[in-house]
Image 1: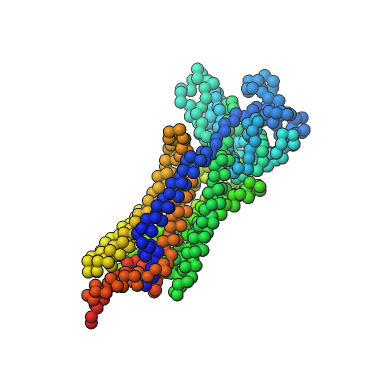
Image 2: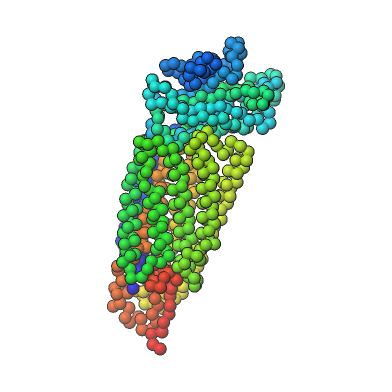
Amino acid sequence: MAGAIIENMSTKKLVIVGVILLLFQALAFMVGGLIAPKPTTAVHYLATKCVDTVKHRQESKWLVPWGPNQCEKIQSFDEAIAKKIEANNIVFAVHIPLPNKEMSPWFQFMLVILQFDIAFKLFNQIEEGALATVDVGLAYRDDTFSEWTEMAHSFEQRKLNCKFITSKTIDNEGRYYECDLLPFMEVGSVAHKYYLLNIRLPVDVRKKVNVGIGEIRDIRLVSIHQNGGFTKVWFAMKTFLTPSILIIMIWYWRRISLMSRPPVLLEKVILALGISMTFINIPVEWFSIGFNWTWMLLFGDIRQGIFYSMLLSFWIIFCGEHLMDQTERNRFSVYWKQVGPIVFGSFCLFIFDMCERGVQLTNPFYSIWASDVGTELAMAFIIVAGICACLYFLFLCFMVFQVFRNISGKRMSLPAMSKARRLHYEGLIFRFKFLMLVTLACAAMTVIFFIISQVNEGHWHWGEHTVQVNSAFFTGIYGMWNLYVFAIMFLYAPSHKRYGDEQSSGDVGGSSGEDIQLTTTVTHVDGPSEIYKMAGKEAQE
């Protein structure tokens, strides 16, 4: 009877395949660590205080901090008071990028963080739960001479969370509060060369707008975008891996189709895993270089969600189909209790993402973290997702332990076999255990490298070379999952080799006492009832 490739391939060839995959894995980490720059760049901006009179506002609504037609500037609010300039006529202007630089579509996205410089005044302190209301507009242009075109405009509120670490006395007036960074803006594409932000802090004492927020001296912004060099490396990896996974997937399903029986559940799930990997691999990001597709961030999140949902479901079904001593197999309905929560959790994360990036498609200044309710909801989503991830990993480890325990119990039948059969089946058991451990190792490596990328400063020095840890994490983990899916489809494809035919000459004498047959889930004619089914048959009735 024909088996899967993992069952029938010689140990030598299997080792060669493993070494090749390991070399490609090392190459994926090296591409990110040694070739690609760090994934993102943060640029700091200090807003310029421009004066916007009523007459000026009728002529042009956009105030530029530098360059041709730059605005009338003031250095401090003391100067504004001396010139009798009202607070409503002061505009904080920020030009992105800095002088003599240009933005590029290769930057992919632009995330802007806001920080207020607020000075302590004894009679103008920050009230508890103070909200800063900003009237903000975003404009763009593609050369230094054309008019600015409005891209977005909104009135937003941000809650101030500031602390004054010294005593609040008149001697400490003028010292600054320590304020948390505030989410300000996120744009899903960088299709233009120049961007302009005009920020106003309207004051209305009667409506209590911007009252009790302290004395704001300056506004600082941090703009974060993806590095163009990293984007090119990332696109190149996607372009290379897409046909690789697509070819092995077509080859895998063609082998399944040539079988005389219909596909079993595990084979269908492996195909679905390959399809989800192909979906995330397709380099549609190339189109973002020529088109202003602001929805690419949301689309990328959806693709990742589909793949990880499919991967988590695959692991559950993969272990379940390999559990022995269970009568109900090869039916998807058996796994609804395990797969159902994964689908529900993925749907909840999708709703959360739509509440954030879905709204940002029309208003880039929106943030779910801007309100107390939104912050609590977001934190609840993150905490629940973390708890569910830990419970899932523990449950997966428990299922793997069950499989290992059942296989170890069946090993007691091996001594009754002939030497050739015993060595063959021991090899199969070892290969399956090794594959399960590789699966757990892939999951653990993803978590470990994610933690390292968060706590590390971003790069290591290796001789004369600088290793970008974060870039190595992205390219290495992305390559690892592609290689994992590639290996699963290759090793679990039906093999044309027949072990029984090859070993029949060596087992003639040994089969007279007892014939012990070992079948795998993928090759069993009636479906995957057990991974290792050892049925003892008397040779002579």
